[in-house]
Length: 313
Image (cartoon, rainbow, N blue to C red):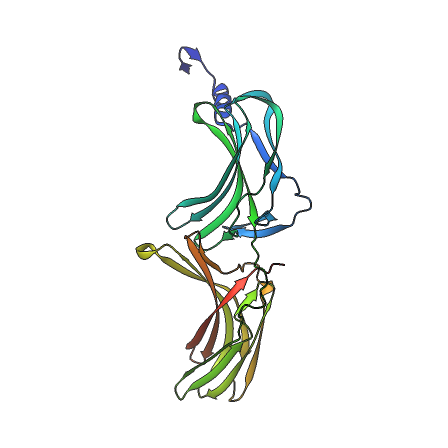
């Protein structure tokens, strides 16, 4: 192969391409308190990922390393670290950044062997909780970039988790929910839940009272429904997902019977707080869905919205 009158082997071309586009550079991020900080396992797409957990006011600090293997000397046009908070939409593939900070770690120069750079992001705005939903995703991450010649660059991203908590306000209304539903001359039931607001480690308690039963009920179940909404106007989109479901009665009830409800929320790791209009991009609401199924497999249901929150101090 002749290039500019010079003979180049394929091996030399591959080596040159690797150095040009940064394929030979190895990079990583080490959080300063990684050994002592709590981590959580979250479902991202089709896989589980382990992520360190931070609060909205926590400082993000640690060390990044950049390696040039085999002792090769690599020229670069600068090394930078960014802390980014962004919302991603699967539907229209838009990405909206709501937090972005930059640290310039190194000016243009050369890399030989391993270089390490300490970093710290203090007082960084982290106003929203991390979220991996049906069509929406909110994440925080560090992006390490080594700029190369001709616009090429090597990039490494390290995602971390942010949880937001709600301080307990005893004066805030948290009334029990009581409702009546029925089909005229066929079915009449009353149900009640002990609260309308629950923190994510709480227990939903309630009862269902059968006042009139003239249809043959086969079983009854209670489900937690998550409803994710995004967009506005013609571009508004709402999708529902059943987070949890369990059977609370098997067999036909009789008039006057009362069925207790006891649902432990701590058993469902995929539950999140209720989100109201996050950065004007999306909302997440939760409903308790009571379903009765008769012997002809007809379904009778009633939904009631509840508010979930992450308990603070």
